[in-house]
Picture 1 (cartoon, rainbow, N blue to C red):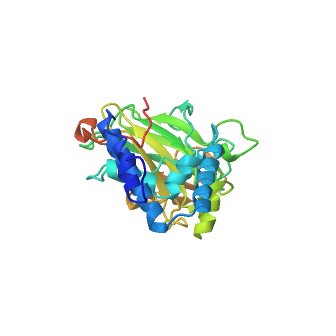
Picture 2: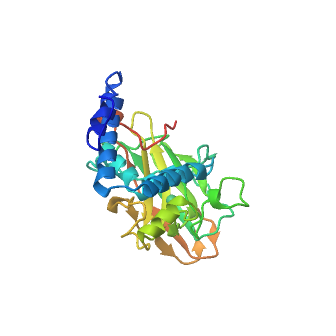
Picture 3: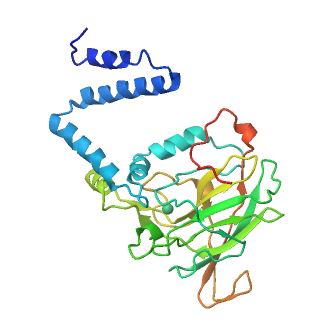
Length: 301
Ligand SMILES: [Fe+2]
């Protein structure tokens, strides 16, 4: 057949995959073509709407730079990122849940000893983080890695600051012989995802707010265990009930205890109120997850 109508076109396109030698790719493309065609038929897409969609995707791509990932932001705000994570990292007893990587991960944060202040010169209320990284049997994991990043106390990430050329509020901390970690940073606040690009326009047109509840990011990894891309959310933060990227998980909400000015946990005098938070990250042994893809975390060593 050389000519197709609005129904036969779908099978015709799928039929062109007959020589595809990668069964997984074939399956994904077959489903993609099927659903894409169904959407076009269902809404009776007009030519101008089709062109607007092409322009939108073009703008999303062009907005990406080495420090901005509008494609991830699009995936996040449409709930695709958290859907993929949820499918590939089902919650199991005790192990820490995964959530979105987000658009502000910056590979190559400095390796710092426990106790370091990740937020030197960063605006925000001082916060002392501590806890342990554990295996499935709750055995402490020595030399586990926490690759940590957050915005400042006003919700701005270093990547978003035009005057900022270096990393801020980022660092890689390793656990000690007892599986413990501790570091200082700031108490993150809620913030809007970037709204000055095509995804921001999409959110406005949808009538949606762009805010995420206060959170600090980390990728936690240890030899022989599945790395986890996760957050700690600030208990009581605004927007916990309506995270713009759908990444909020109850098990990741941590209590940030407020203290008056005085000596911090490290013995240093703090002239302002400060916070402490304690959270243990339990990882799943890699062998327990055989057959599951591990796609939410970059490989870290
Ligand atoms: Fe974030």
